[in-house]
Length: 199
Image 1 (cartoon, rainbow, N blue to C red):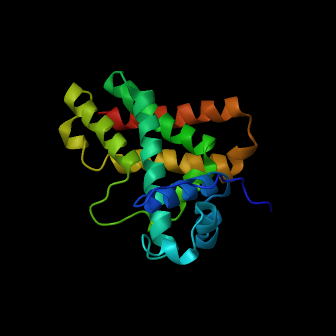
Image 2: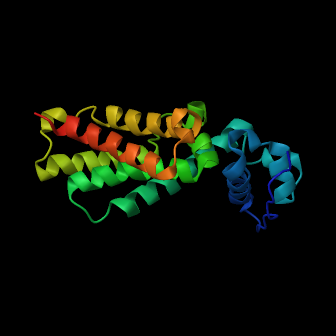
């Protein structure tokens, strides 16, 4: 398979880490996680393979950095789609924005979430989850969701949109026309919200 065309990254002293992540973003955009090979990243950045180890201990640490950058881009798109809106509309837009990003950027979605070991652990919260949490908290603030129903509500919401995205990218929904997929996505998100807000 031919390699994607990646412009040679230019960087100044001290910016190699950023340049390596940018090359990683370009390689994975069409190729997914499997396209991230340290030797290829170094070549496109114009450095020796050993130079990458000054900033990343191994492929997994670079993949984690690329995944974090993708998650940030995804969350930003979700937030743009969601504002300004009522709390319910915001939650709906966040869910549809998650699915929309996955369908528009399947390579990046693969990197961001298919290998969760690539997502930094500890106190790191993936940016899309932060956007979802904010939308759910807004429902409580608005009075649409009872405070007692809020704890843990992010997990069924995230599971629904993530599962739908996988079905649309790799499962039976992938053969459906785009309009039909969009309609099914809307129905899925609306069903989750209706269930969440039911007494």
